[in-house]
Image 1 (cartoon, rainbow, N blue to C red):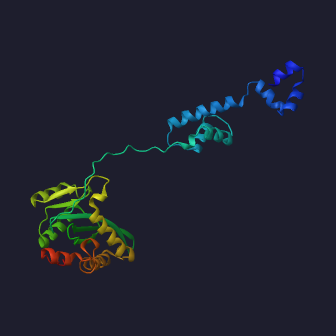
Image 2: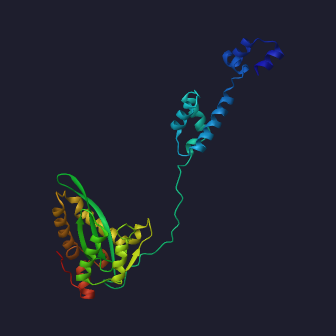
Image 3: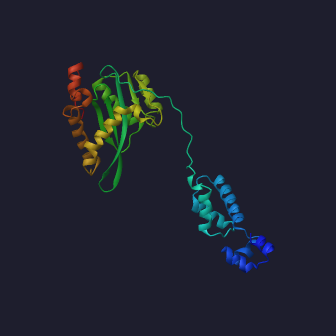
Amino acid sequence: MIDQITQQHSCSIRFCCGALGFRRQTYYQRKRGHRPEEVDEQIADLLHQTTRRFIAWGFWLVFYFLRRKGYSWNHKRVYRVWKAEELHLRLPPKRAGIKRTYQELLAPDEINAGWAMDFLSDWTVGMAKEPVRIINIMDEKSRLALWTEAHRSISAKTLIEVLDKVVEYRGRPKYIRCDNGPEFISQKLAQWAADNQVELKFIQPGKPSQNGLIERLNKTLRVECLNLHWFENLEKLNESIQGWFVDYNTERPHENLERQTPLEYETDNNDLYFKTVA
C-alpha cells in the first residue's frame, strides 16, 4: 500500500508511514522479507507436526521441544498461534473401549443356593503400618454374612480352608459368585469347586456391579466398623470385626428383607439358624 501511494503521488516513505500510522521499521523489515504472517505460518506448521507426533503433549512441552530444536520465538507469540490453531482444544488420548455384554445380577430363589465372596483391604497401626486383607462371604438370598476374617495375606490355600469351615456348618451352595482376583482364578480353588460340585461364577472384568451384594457388604463393614477405629494389631482388628459380624446378622435391620435382620429372615423362611464360628 505504501509503495502504491509513493508511486502514484510521488510522496516520501516517511510521509506515507506517518499518514497511515505505520512504523518505518515495519515497512523496511517487510521489504527485506521479514513478514510476520509467514513466520506465523511456519510456527503453526511446526506446532501441528509436533502435536501429531506427540499427541499427549501440552503447550509448554511443545514450546520447549521447539526451543531445543533451535527456534527462538517468544513464548507469547507461539502461544498466540497455538490458540489461533485451536490446539488447546485437543482431546486427551483415550484407550479403546472394551466391549462387554451386560450380564444381569440375579439373586437365587433359595437360601444357601448361592454365595458371594470378595476381599477388602485395610491396615493395622502397631509398631508399623501393616496391610491386612479381609475376606467376606455372604448368602445372596438372605444377605447373611457367613464369614468375615482378617489375615496378613490370603492365598488360595487359606481361602480353601475358610470355605471348608463355612461348608462344614452351612452346607454346600450351588454356586459362588466372585471377581477375577488371582486367588479366585487359581487352579487350587477350581479343583476345590469341582470336588465339592460348586460352580464358580466369575463376573466380567471391570464390572463390580455384577457382584453388587458383596460390594455393599464391604461398604457396610468399612463404614460401620473399619473407619471408626485404629487397630493396633491383627487380633484387635479381628475382635472388632467379629463384634460387627454378630451385630450385622442379628441386630441390623435390612431394607431389602422388609426391615428384618438376615438371621430373622432365614429363621422365618428356611428354619436355618445362625451359628457363630470361632
